[in-house]
Image (cartoon, rainbow, N blue to C red; front, top):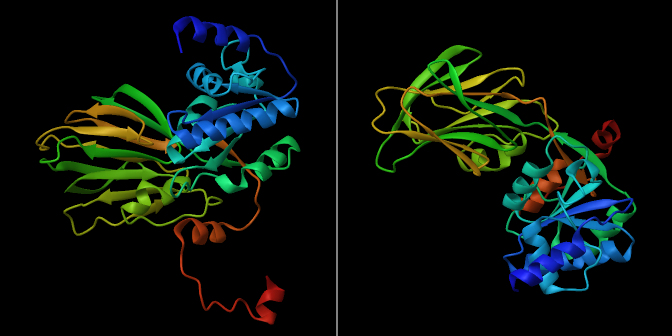
Amino acid sequence: MSVGDADNLRQRGRGVAGDRHILVVAHTGRTESLEAGVSVCRSLIDAGLTPVVSADEFADLMAADATLSPLAILGDGIEVGDLELTIVLGGDGTILRAAELTRGVSAPLLGVNLGHVGFLAESEREDLDDTIAKVLARDYLVEERMTLSVRVKIDSQVVYESWALNEATVEKASRERMLEVVIEVDGRPLSSFGCDGVVMGTPTGSTAYSFSAGGPILWPTLDALTLVPLSAHALFARPLVVSPDSSLAVEVLDRTQGTGVLWCDGRRAFDLPRGARVVVRRSPIPVRLARVTHGPFTDRLVRKFQLPVTGWRGPGEEEGARS
């Protein structure tokens, strides 16, 4: 597509107004995601809604199907505050990218998994038509997920601020060098050790990096913070679960031979020199997720991780009556 063609497409998407605006976020660099994006936008348009996309995705979608009109561009007459819902097509990485766009507004995220596990996604590719039907009927529930407020301090001065839905991770910057840290809970030092890093996470993030590092799985209805050391050389280096009102901190000690790096959701990075201090607390701004299925979290664990449950007989009659 030429620059002139892209500009013409942009003009066709500008200033589109409608009563219901649905943001569609897709990884349009992948064929399956691009095809799903075209399908979703077409379904929304046919139902009289206005699909909204980013400028980059607008060009890709229109190149795939030039009949997608009206198709609006986010920020070009329509802002995030105008959105009713965000449909995310992809894996957890795409959902985390969408959360960056919409955190702090009322429009929830609804993920359709096109990746592997896709734990944040609400439905799968084969359920796409049914999911869109529920979106059109506003047949979904909204739940708020805790997020983290993340600060980096050097000599008591805040040099960086960010947030995370899953986790904030302090990691060694060099593969050959160990990170020497001291961890702190509620303003008091707890332990010091050499390690590959430390993961500080939310219940939502307990099935992500924290899970891979051996941390506990927390039900999303639980309010708590977790801290999980990565390959720590210490006797006391167990995963911790603390109050949602607690503060967690990791200090990079001066004896570290090298530097560290802070990652927030694996997307936003900040270099940590020796002496840096990373402070994590509960953020007052949650991420809102839409749910079109209403089964228990246990069933989601079994389905996403393909856990073996053969032989389960279920609760007896008396126990079932109590539940």
